[in-house]
Image (cartoon, rainbow, N blue to C red; front, top):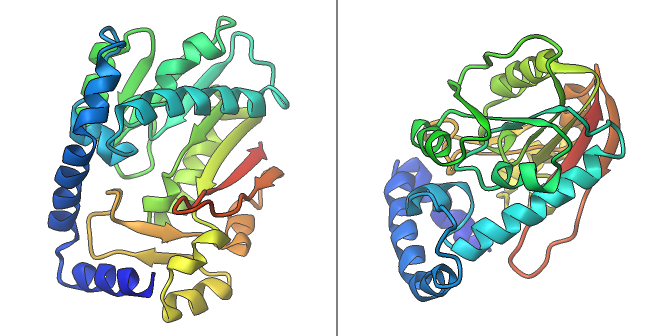
Amino acid sequence: MKNKIKVSSLLRKLRLLHPADILRFKLERAKNKQTNKEFLKPHPDVKLPPDYLIYESHNMSYSSYFYNGKKDAAYFKSIFEKYVPLKDAAILDWGCGPGRIIRHLPDVIGNGCSYYGTDYNEKSIDWCTENLPEIHFNKNELTASLPYEDNFFEALYGVSIFTHLSEAMHHAWFDELYRVLKPGGVMLLTTQGDVYKAKLNKTERQQYETGNLVVRGDVVEGHRVYSAFQPKPFMQKLFKNVEILEHIEMPIEKDWYPQDQWVVRK
């Protein structure tokens, strides 16, 4: 792990993380070529985004993109329905990417709900708009501005979005999400919490332990290689104007580092 941290830090300083990530994408695509072919055979009608969009938002496995997306949709339903009625509700996927989760919500939730997805990746939004016509999509900018009225959504979620934003954008975007959420509405947001301390270098870990956000920049903000790590005190301060309903932490499993889940109510 220490060697990986050193290599990643060096690539970041040399501004080579983007080329390295493209190389990783090509390797992952080759690695998954056969299993992806096997997925396509029994699923000829499943619409899939271009490979890089799948990789950028998740990983390079078609099966994981589709089935884990469906699993996550069912899980989010189970969280939301504990706190808000999911009938005729408006639900937002903030940072929807190429529709991995939101594509399943009409089937998983139904109940006359309306579904909205927003993302700053124009290619993802173009693909979603063309291929998932029953859902409303909007391209947002990196700056915190959404085209929805105040108090519009009963529920919203953002999976691994704060993890790619600066401290200023944490505050700006949370204020914007708060604006569009109805009073009594619920948000589910994921962060890189304590289990990710194993991935931090000594200086980063010291900063994290003092309750401060740790940001690895030197790349375009919002991209997958721009990374932020959120200690509990930082998130608790961010959520000072909402009720924290749940903070879900899960242990590391093999090479999988689960993100923290924060469920809050306006």
